[in-house]
Length: 218
Image 1 (spheres, rainbow, N blue to C red):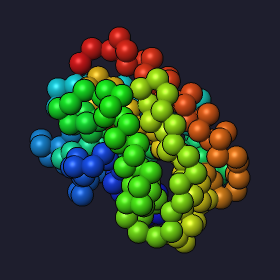
Image 2 (image 1 turned 120 degrees about the horizontal axis):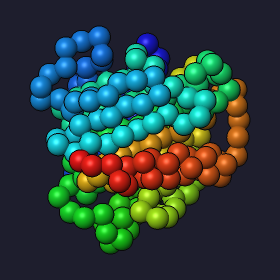
Image 3 (image 1 turned 90 degrees about the vertical axis):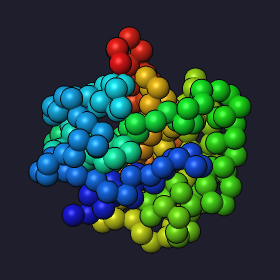
Image 4 (image 1 turned 90 degrees about the horizontal axis):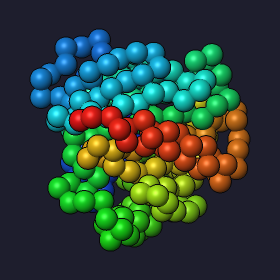
């Protein structure tokens, strides 16, 4: 399934040295006790228990969590968001929630964010931002750090885009309740928009996640 292939490829975005989750289980399969657990599964709300820390993710207006796009693995959970009405002109959204912090056991300091930003701006880092992480022609548009969130905009011209996706990808890296969270938006092939507007919309989603997790207990 194309959507599932997309979710698997996006899980590759992690700071240098952090583990990736090569194997996922969908809701239709038994969830191994070693996997990141899902404590709440609803159409508009998911709560992830990542090694004792809970991250709450509510779907933005107009989007829902399809059960076929909810997966969990040993290192992270992956959540796909699709327009509730099936509108193929909207961006495809996803969240990846890891069982470790954004920088492992280290605090998300400005120094660590600066080092991560430098990595994303390197040749290897830019490739990791693409649909098929580590391969193809991926071009960095910009990076921006704001309020504890590192944003990266890229164009994937490798030809690996899926039937429903365009070439522009926007990712946001942050830490919520001590856990790494990556929020991604991939432009729809039918809904061509300016990259800057994609980043602005993604920032609204991230700010909402930050707000709903600020007073949410682990």
